Image (cartoon, rainbow, N blue to C red; front, top):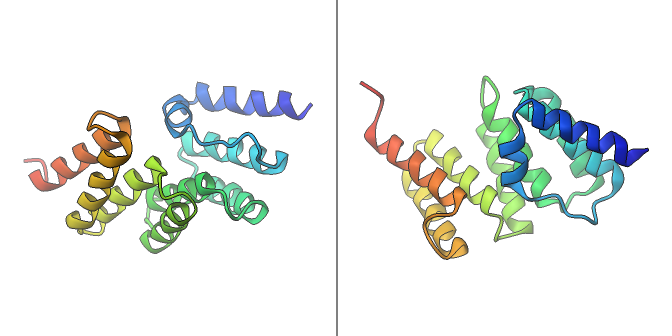
Length: 160
């Protein structure tokens, strides 16, 4: 029954356009508690729908269940950063927790780099870009390419 629910949530998330986030994150450990798995799936669907408050509620519950889940912290940081009025302090808090738990978490390196750009700290973003180059072994992995593009856009300034 739980698997059917989880499958329907993931399918709904994909239908809403979360497929890039789901395939990109590649971050759901198979040993997660069932409640945390369901919360993470529901949060991903909310993220796909840009329902940041629902995503935050689900992810807060997931990290209460599994406080050492780097993926949940990463997505919690992302959700705080993407709200209409971003909460960068909360975003940084959760990205840092994700990286403390898993220093090799490519998604957290990308997203914290993007948060640093929002905070007008491109040098900090470039540190995470360098770390992504090291982790990826090249400059073509998706997380590296996305952060490199964001840094390039930031340096180019506002569109004219």
